[in-house]
Amino acid sequence: MMERLFFGAVATVLIFSALMAVGTRNLVRAVLWLGLTLATTSMFYIMLNAPFLATLQLILYTGGVLSLMLFGVMLTRRSNEQEGVEVHNESNGQRRALPIVAVTAGLIVMAVGRTDLSVAAPAAAKPEIREIGQRILGAHLLAFEVLSVLLLAAMVGAIVIARRKDASLEGKDDPRDRAAALPGSRLSSDRET
Amino acid sequence: MGLESYVLIAGILFCVGLYGILTRRNAIGVLVSVELLVNAANINLAAFAHFGRGLDGQVFVLFTTALTVAEVVVGLALVILLFRRRKDILLDLANGLKG
Image 1 (spheres, rainbow over the protein chains, first blue to last red):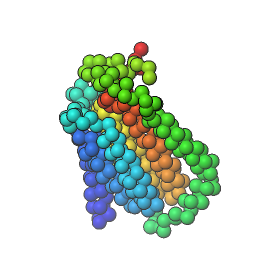
Image 2: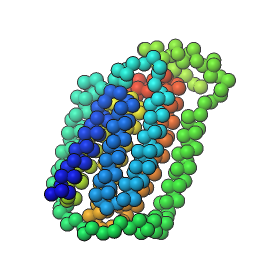
Image 3: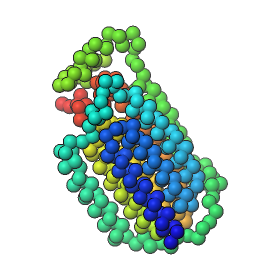
Image 4: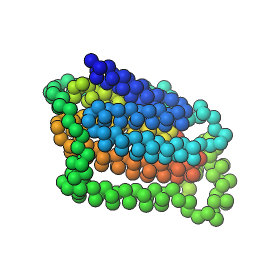
């Protein structure tokens, strides 16, 4: 009974915060709601006897990804921009999105309904963090190494993409960029830099 | 709680994220929604690992976590590049590759 209540409460917070993260106009608030979603997910991990994942979730997502995203929001916000400019959706977009979401939801519910998922919950066991480490460096060693290469590639790629091309050209570029940012003008993206 | 409840909650979370991807105009809003999708998948993996009495699911969650972090880093770099070129990050206005 107690467990059911707790599960319901955590699930409610999870879904509500996810809805807010998707629905708020203000992007900073959306990112903070996402943080609540990610933190609540770690509750699920604890209920699923995976405390290592819960810790990692809090450190990596709520600590790392969230602050990165906040940096992103604040770096890309124009100083003269009103909050409302980040207009989230015209009704047109909603009308197109809702059928797709409805079909996906129907498919998920159908799949869950048709599959036999009635597995008895395992008896409470001690979480095996040592075993996880041994599996990562044992059976899944190749995936681990590939992942490290991928992280290196992502790091190099992020630096190359986000680097300023040439500091001396920035001053000359500025007025053109500002002119190109006027509504209706699409020239800036076509320009070769 | 049974396995179905976890799978259904993850399904709802996935649908919410999908809705966000389809309706957000702002690139960072889309990244937020992608996080929700990955999170739903992670909950499923952890749930199946728990109820299947194995640990490989948990190891898989670790890998997807690392993948997502890499994706966010590259995505934000692209967003910043887009902002520098166009002074906005509204995706429906970014049509520079249109033929």
